[in-house]
Each structure stands twice: as C-alpha cells, then as structure tokens.
Picture 1 (spheres, rainbow, N blue to C red):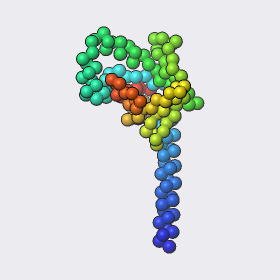
Picture 2 (tube, one colour):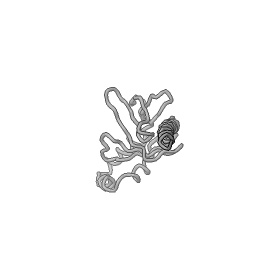
Picture 3 (spheres, helix red, strand yellow):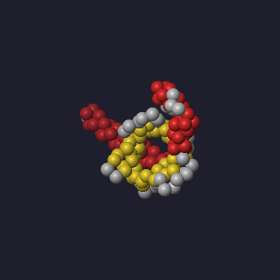
Picture 4 (cartoon, one colour):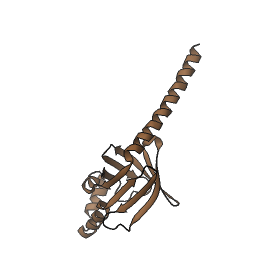
Length: 148
C-alpha cells in the first residue's frame, strides 16, 4: 500500500512539474510579445568587467558607432511567433526570424533561415529584459532591453 501511495505521489509530482514548466514558458512568451528597444546605458552596466574594460579602451569614434548601432535596434516579438529586428533610423535594415522560448522559459531561440540564435534570459518582467547571446557573445555579453 505504501508503494502505491509513493508511486501516485511521484506521478502527481511529475505531472505538476511539467504543467508548471509549460505555464512558465507561456508566461515568458506572453511577457516577450511586443517591441523592445536596447537601453544603451544599462547594457553597458550589465557587461562583465573584462568586456567593459575592453570596450572603454576602444577609440571614442568606434564607441560612438557601437552606440548608434545599438540604440536604434527594435526587437519585435510577435504573437504569431514571427520576430523582426529593425533599425529606427534605417527602416530598410531588417532581420526577420521566427522565435520560441525553450528550457522552461530560460532561453529565447531565433531561427533566421538556416541559422539558430539563442539567448539566455537573465531577467524578464513586463518592462525589462536582460539576455545573453549563447552563440557568439562578442564584446557585449548581455543586452538590456526595455519594452516600448
């Protein structure tokens, strides 16, 4: 009898953990839907110290180009799982993709043609998103975005 109770509790625990995960993914997808813009100052603040030091050593003209490129980016997560990255100053520059949320709500996946880009979610609420590129982080190891 004890074994049956234990088995029933184990099955219930598995069911609840799986339904909790699905809800978590749904909550994250719901929060992501909409248009986000990179917050330049906060993106610099969330950089790790090594990258921040390297960034500060770059000539000011090159840093100004980074800033101009980053602050004009709009990330649009659409309800139909389409994604659009666009630039405010040049509407002809766009990247279209499809998106999804994986790993119990911890990863954003963008599929652009044959390429897959993944971002680890470090923080998300209804107005602020902090993500880290998994594929090739480069100088900016995290991005801070605010909902528009």
